[in-house]
Amino acid sequence: MKKIIAASLLTVLSSATMAGELVPACVEYFKQADQFIASTPEATPAKPKYDAFKKQTTELPSADQETACKQGSELLRQAIATKPAN
Image 1 (cartoon, rainbow, N blue to C red):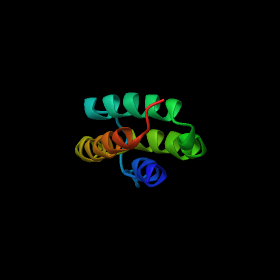
Image 2 (image 1 turned 120 degrees about the horizontal axis):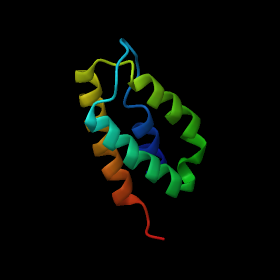
Image 3 (image 1 turned 120 degrees about the vertical axis):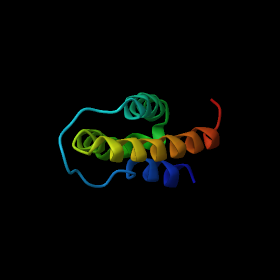
Image 4 (image 1 turned 90 degrees about the horizontal axis):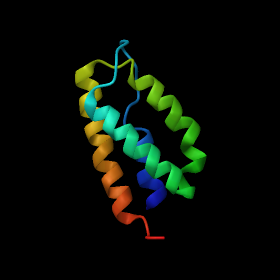
């Protein structure tokens, strides 16, 4: 389940359409996702895809960034909730 959520988290955004900066929702999402990936060994193999995903996000229109990062944040919350405490 954790791997499925982590994989879903990394594939929320799929296409790039225009260049721009990250909206605040994405800045916060990526901050939290970076922390999650760093603290979750199961997510390490997906890191290269995640890094590419982060780069592509800046190319999305702001409205699409907002929507996608909010969806990603929800998936991240679910992943964190199912992660066993260390």
